[in-house]
Structure formats: structure tokens, C-alpha cells
Image 1: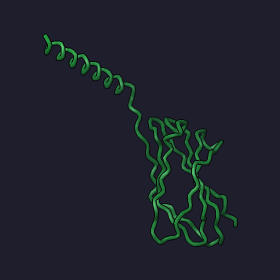
Image 2 (image 1 turned 120 degrees about the vertical axis):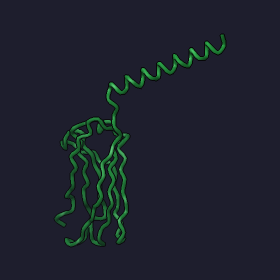
Image 3 (image 1 turned 135 degrees about the vertical axis):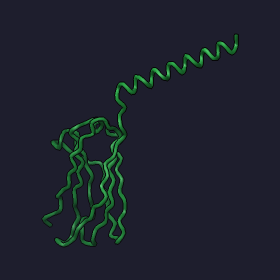
Image 4 (image 1 turned 45 degrees about the vertical axis):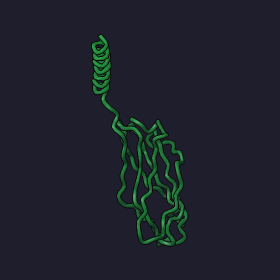
Length: 138
């Protein structure tokens, strides 16, 4: 069928974020796309790598699909990330898939100044602890 192999792309700037996760609710009709592949690109969409293939439910109730890209460091802190869903397996031109409530999340990377403050705080804490220990035994 004409739409098998078509895709949906999300262009994302993950600058200052790591551990990227894609999630969405999905379902399909009985003749809709039965085998969909999630892929990723770290170079703006020039080269894609398959991540996972899933089969949407034919239930009237949506199911949530989650794809955790934390093990793909090239997607972290990158202004050129593209996530792609390729649709395949439809058996009728009237079949469809539904995708709703798309979320793309990540963990914020602390600013370098925040890291310096955290390290200074940890050092002061160590010094304070040591002094207390020394004065306690004196």
C-alpha cells in the first residue's frame, strides 16, 4: 500500500539535556500499520539508526509506548536530534494509526557554575566535618 514506509519526524534541540525519552499513546485500526519502527539521528536526519520496533494495539483503548534513549550518548546535549517513527504493515488504504500525547523529555545538564558551587559546598562540608572531628577528639 502507498503509505507503508512513510514516517513521522520530530526535530529536537537537546542542548543542555541528557537521557532523552520519547513517549506517546497509540492504537490502530485492524487494517492499520501493524509494525512501526522508532529510529534516531544525531546529525539532523542525514543518517538514521533503528532503535525499536513495536506493534500498536487494535484495542479501542490507547496504550502508552516509551522509548528510553539514555544509552545513546550522541543524542545528549545535541541541537540536531531527529526521532522518527516509520509506519508499516497496513493492509488497507483506510487503515490508520493514532498517536496522541507525545512527550519528549530529558534530564537537565547542570550549568558549569552550578557544578562549581556544588563542589565548593562539598569541599566546605568535608572541611567542616574534619574540623568537628578534630575538635571533638582534642
